[in-house]
Length: 577
Image (cartoon, rainbow, N blue to C red; front, side, top):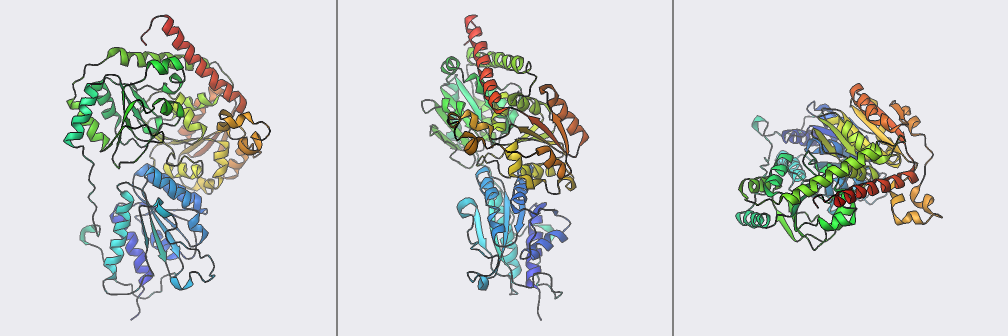
């Protein structure tokens, strides 16, 4: 009797992934991927998201996985479709985001024969994946169901790590690619909906020696700092408890999720003042997460300062080669235990000096930028960050937006912040934001520039049909604003052609073409209100704010000067250093 192995294989994979907690799948349409696409579509436990563009589909999957912390199945047909997944796979790898990447393929007899839509997909993504497997064509053999389910279990477990990241299953299928109507090959799962191979994740518990060493370091070094970047993987309450016990200030990039009241929010402009930076060099720094977004602080934290990097996966997040010690441990457990056990003579002048300077800098920044009626990108970042409703999400694009959020955003609670900082690209940002909004229960706001918006314009395809509450705040400076801060700006003959790259697209018209409501904002004071009104209204909306690239550079420098002026004034008055 002939039995349908292909349909049984696809359904077994899907059922096994559901047992591992998978709830979402992103599919780019195609023929060769039909068996698995049909299995995903027919399982009502899976939320299916179909996207015409493979690159946008992959970044949408990335966004859902970022927001949920669970693997998302990503599926495409054979050929260049699989190659279009590569940028998102790289971001997922470097940012430690779980994804199960499935590329349909031609069977072995059609490879390297000139068959259409056929490329070499074996190990296509290189070492960017946690695990690769070329599954082979499903066939009817004794005990094959156990093989299929173990494969699905391993893929799910591998994506969750440690470290988390993408896995790649290359799936060669022979025709017929749709159910034949024949009986299915039997591939039953375990009873009670248990996974075939259950995953029991552990934690990187700190050793006694590790705790003892760090405890002595903190106790003997009152002039210390905690620095938190993306992927910190520790709660704000634990960080603040440790900071209070140690008597150390906390410098937290907003995308760490740790910029809460009590942290230093203006460290970037503060450390641009040479006198302040020299007077406030710490003796030791405990780092959690990746590097900060702006270079100023990371360059200030040079190799002469003792730095301990805590990471559960022992990642080498040290581009400046300055870290003097690395601890492979769960930061939550490590810092929580230390907070309960350390006995420190707190240097009140050290903590107070940072806090007083932070308050002075915040006042100087707010007083200056609030007096500018024309939109300024630093103020836009500050106001958007503050205006996202409690329990909402903010997705920040690379290039200038993520840097402006770090420099200008004040401390607050009740906000989840996301950014693609694994490889720091602007590609796929619109789709990433759509993915995050798909999973986020509250409203989502995305802050991005005009080139970033255009780079993933296909992410808008069918966006109004995806039932998301998502507001795009597009800062339109007619090109690549970040390059105006770099040495390339001193080459006027080729600057616009090669770096500024001005574009003539009517962004508002492009958004409206996709059914997105657009609000044009011309005054700085109207940005926060526009965000509040858009998030309250729900649905997909765009706030379009035009700025001037040259004026933006000047105004950033005016802000740094104002902060330095406030510090000089404090020093003349004999304030704490």
